[in-house]
Image (cartoon, rainbow, N blue to C red):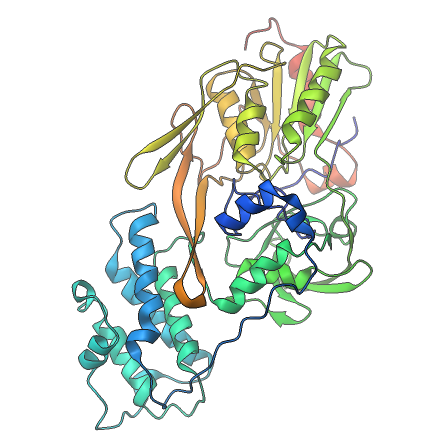
Length: 500
């Protein structure tokens, strides 16, 4: 039996945030655009077709270190960001010591990159004390002790002989980024004004790229899976590949959305990605010619030589629920003995779409819980519209099954509605929102909640274990074999009843 698609590993994220630029503003895996923009685009899709460059460039006066500066005004974004974290971050109470250490690490890492060790810098004898600088900057009194070491380092940076020419803004943004990173949550991050502007390029109407589902929440952009027939697939990219550099530029510490903006480009142009792959001892370059990307949503058929229906769902987009409903109506009209739902390499999509699609297979009950840091929950329940709530069901999953796909698969597994066959899913079950800082000082992306399955199982960082484990090897792919699909057919054909 031939493979239905290049099924491989890894996952996260939502809709098609992949490296084709048709990045609609999906929010199920993570909000990488801002809520107002998301709502605007949903209500007026024409916003996706704005002319590139319509957004004015960010212009900010850079004040060199050594000149006079109003520290209270400079550090206002730092304390505003801290307040947002206290209001929104999923894990409360906030670890103030971790924030302070992170800020200190961020400041020091900036100088380390320039070959300067702040501990060895000579500081002017008439420089203000660290406590005085802390007071001038408006450091909240309740965290003054935790930030004392940070202010010692800042004193060296502002009044010491560092031998570097830098701006106060550079130092602030490095400190702020480090403070947020100090929480230890890879999905919670700070974007400075330039990075924020770059992240918004996904709304600029460019629909050309390399065609890959990606995860931007890891240290480096990671390939979830190349889209079938895409330039990424033709170039040999594999799930789990890590993008270390783009066109020779190191992506260390660069926000994932900015990395994506650098990979995007007109069809016919070339981009070179430096890839780190687990099976290879050294990084290597992959040259990819960009193209216009068409993203499928649903494919369906009755498998040749069987009475089993096969439906593959590629994404949870705005139209995916209706398209799946039509596909189910078509195959169910053939009166199949069983149904295989293929969620391999499906990286997720819209929350409402996930609930609608789950309702096709689960008759009633909870689809998922969204649990916030204070313990409160939002509950999402199945709707009464399902076409496939009784037919024997197998769901194919792998490491590329993520986010909305895991919600669907988790509900089917919890209700014993069908069996999961394949490999452990990715484990992307957190919700992010974005908070703009005042005066165009950037933004925060903050994890605010986690998803739980109907049986209150945690997905994030864990994934779903299949009921029947069937690995898929590189040798299988090269031989065009799909043992996971074959096993699903065997299970359906061997069933003794319609109940699992």
